[in-house]
Length: 388
Image 1 (cartoon, rainbow, N blue to C red):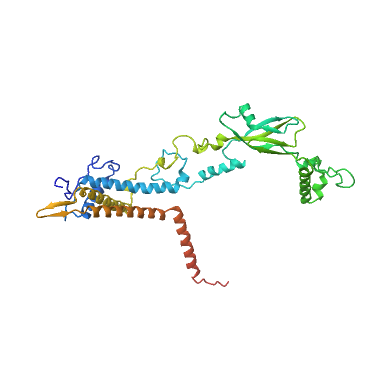
Image 2 (tube, helix red, strand yellow):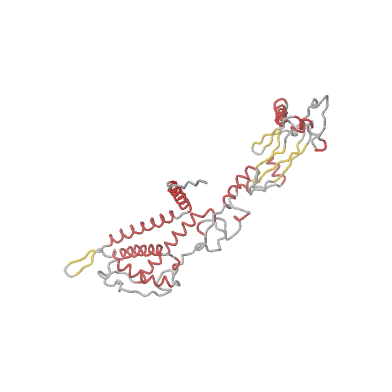
């Protein structure tokens, strides 16, 4: 212990050499506070009543670590609170002093996946294909078609989304020979394009539910009494009902499973380089010390003290006792380490609680409670009665 460096009551901050990383050495306010914090910590650790086996540079390093820890906690909270809005944005613009605006962009991009599956939009391309149906052939292998036609690569596959195979719409076959007066139909609306689809008089004189009921009857008749136009797909094997009687061409829509299953965005703001992809590349830098307010600096001072106490405890742990004339003294390593680490945990928990209380969700909840309390108070105030 005789060769240990002792605190002399003052220290000189030297830019570029006093700290381990020099993150904040160019900040003049940081340079001033570093000297003050070193004196504050040494005093809290017992100086001048007892020796403090630490030099100025050790206090300065603890101070730098405390500022960095404060910045990490604040900015990590910002990242967690806003990552849904930050993801896929450029990561080449520093966000330290930027207000993050909530955005629906990523939520919409996630919702596009559901739209792709439902066939109502999305980011997955729908391709069109066709096969030749032969008379008397009911089964068609669309996997074989995809491979032979070159629609996909050998290690890819397709998924059929739509098959354009159905009977003519019921409205085309809607014909009532007894509509109007006498036999035949009265094509009163030929000029409007309805004459070849339904007796025009029905559009004029019958209620709409009559037409809907008739259409449903036609479709139900086709389904039960006839071999209705239908199909079945199992693993991209298509079965046609009824069995085709003539050669025809059948069209369908499909997607490539490689595009649907890909986890990498290929279009839109989620593609390309220099983008925010995870919390490791969100562009937050170390804080500017001179911009930190008084509550933040006080937290940093206390955390510096906790780190300095831990460092001093580790130093004193080299010897459990020190001989003195006629006796020996026991050092307080265990107390320093235990209390310093408890203080670090308490300070971190306090900072995280403060950050949670300042979140957007908590602010809105607090504002709603404030409005409710104000409304309740105003309801107790007598209101004037005006007589006109």
